[in-house]
Amino acid sequence: MDGYIVTSLQDMAGPSNPLAKTVVTQSGAWLTNYGAHPWMLAAPALGLAGPLSTLLCLSLRRDKTALICSGLAIFGIISTAGLSLFPFLLPSSLDPAVSLTVWDASSSHLTLFVMLLATVLFLPLILAYTTWVYRVMRGPVNATSIGRNPNAY
Image 1 (cartoon, rainbow, N blue to C red):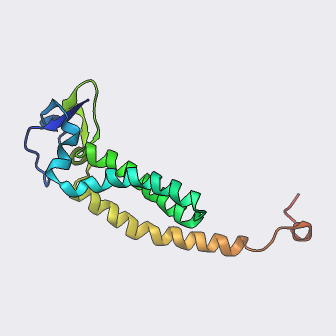
Image 2 (image 1 turned 45 degrees about the vertical axis):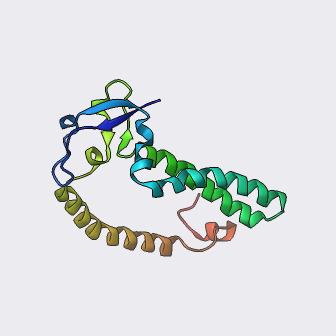
Image 3 (image 1 turned 180 degrees about the vertical axis):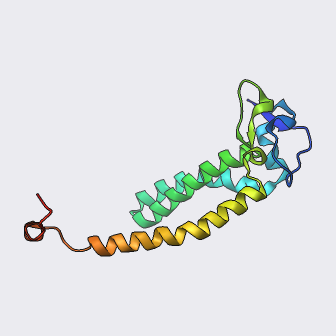
């Protein structure tokens, strides 16, 4: 299966321009990350060892350990896909040059700062409103409480 490699230099700190990169198709390119960073091989190893250890733990009636091993297996499988595709998030099958990379999907510093200010401003308001609504609406709802409410039908 052919993979993609970004051949142009990308400015990680500059504004994103998805059309400014050049991408080539190369056989076996999805595996190049593992050669450059051998620690990434832990993900496929976990993706293979996780299901096997889950089966072993289930046969030994170790249910809690099997659940943990199952979670590690899922983590390993999903991590393998992410590490194999990096830096591509959404590879394009029509034109590799328009594939979405991590740097194409990132926001600018100004956008992140504006979102930080919006969060600092609105999150306390949302938490205060949620607390107020929870306090007003607390308590059980039964036939007696509905009968005492003149607005209930």
